[in-house]
Amino acid sequence: MRKPCCDKESINKGAWSKQEDQKLIDYIRVHGEGCWRSIPKAAGLHRCGKSCRLRWLNYLRPDIKRGIFAEDEEDLIIKLHALLGNRWSLIAGRLPGRTDNEVKNYWNSHIRRKLIKMGIDPNNHKPHQSFSHPHASVEVASTSESMSKDQKVPFLKKSSGDAATDRISFTKSLEEETAIISSPPLNLDLTIALPSPMIGAAEDKPMQNSESAKSWDINIDLNC
DNA sequence: AAAACAGACAACCGCAGCATT
DNA sequence: GAATGCTGCGGTTGTCTGTTT
Image (cartoon, rainbow, N blue to C red; front, side):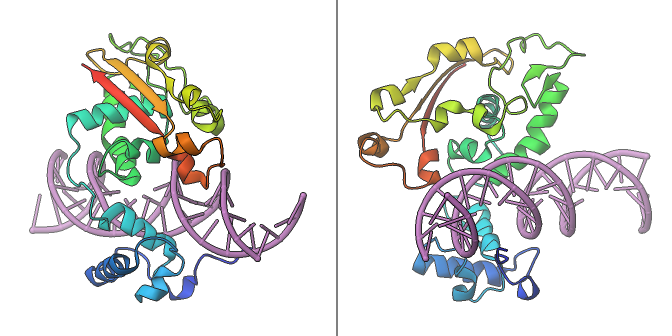
């Protein structure tokens, strides 16, 4: 049996106090991120390492952008969701200063509702059967509900090792395969490619960890 | 003014994937 | 190759706040 990630008896739960926040900020300023399991003890916090990580990533990080989402950010979330499904971390990665939790919450509380009101099923970005939206007539090929985790974005998983083939342009296929999901219809150009340092290293070394594998360049041109 | 309700957001939980032993 | 440990992700829940009745 695996040990629990922390001693549940002696850890705090719930909202973070100002003092706890400050302790965590001070510690990470000096020692940097990483080794979350040891951070609570080292920083003098009675918190689970996971909780520290979440608090830092979603709230305390200095580069976090807070406040309401701009219209173009919302558009981008909708388009990326149509393409990637509920891959919040990937989506958030394309929105500077936004966290996956924030994007997920915004989706669930705002965008979902909005799409439903427009007569669009937020799960598959298709028009509801009972309601046909004039601009939501194209089907999305790869969305979350109908596919397994691996099937959702197969092009993100596989690397041929060839930089030229790994930089895939979806410009044409996107027009064919993905939905035009908002009104008025948008022309969406999207490119997904290995991040530049990976291209050179791809032939020699496998990826070091799952996160590096997820750090793909996704370039999107929105021609509205 | 108070209760009920809805929306927004922070935080927790369980699981999966990868690395290490 | 199996067992274990750590990290990150996505789903879900809890709580706070604002609005309506």
